[in-house]
Length: 336
Ligand code: ADP
Ligand code: MG
Image 1 (cartoon, protein in one colour):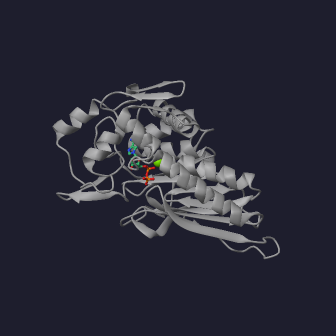
Image 2 (spheres, helix red, strand yellow):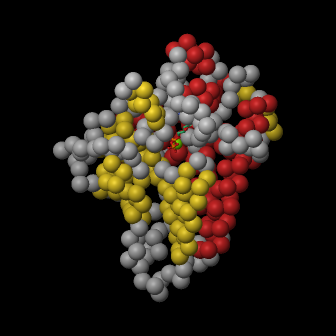
Image 3 (cartoon, protein in one colour):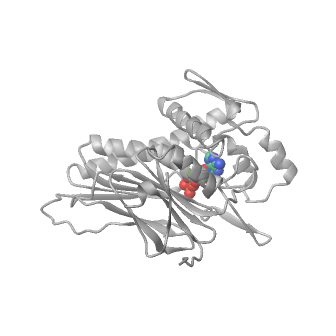
């Protein structure tokens, strides 16, 4: 049976508050806006209040460091000057981005910045379909070969600029989870606009249930993933998009064509212990499509798992998630 979807996608986080009050002495929550999206952090038990506060501060600090539009950010300065003495955080981010770039044959590529700009996906720009000629010109400056890193100095080619929108939230959730744990809080859930990070187990000791949304109807779910202490990141062509001449254009760009990815997928959710990898891969697998993603999975099944929803509303789950994925719909399993 196939599922019938409408429009939109989100991750619904289901928290069953079934624990008794004697098990948990406190619960703290903060909803805030950072990295262009609404974020929620909920922590339970020891030091939950200070954990949430410190995690929010760290995410705001990283937002200022990585933002492509904030004139004080390191990335903004790099894009203007074409070189920067990178902070530890920026160098780590570049490392992960380059690793995923190699792993995905360029499907994930932070040098797509001029393309995102041409398509008008930055705040304050008008969304538009660029001419084919413009796209071809811009593509000349896209590609990992246009970035040189020598110790701590990052240098970009003349017309190259970088955008970490496909990975920064992953880095932020990794740091926030670390801070929460170091602060002595062992149970928390972070929801950073499509990036979910479970810290430890639920306060009652059971697994967190993370709903994978129906890409066509935010209020419904396609299935649920039961997880402990891991990142679950979803990418889809649904949130930042516009219609032109009856066709839909979204913000995940295929770096090989310069156009929004059209690989036959509505959404990809990636599960990994490594938040940065989960974030970058969710974007990359969306670009690569189901078949190429399945090949990548067979070679890297210890690093990540994934749930795919195709344009035909079929659900595919990698076999390392088979026992943690639950759905009212039929789904197919991708074997190692
Ligand atoms: P979301 O913005 O919903 O979190 P993603 O994690 O998939 O979704 O990130 C999309 C963002 O990543 C875009 O807004 C853009 O900044 C950037 N991006 C788009 N296409 C690519 C790509 N092929 N490689 C790397 N980054 C990309
Ligand atoms: Mg991503």
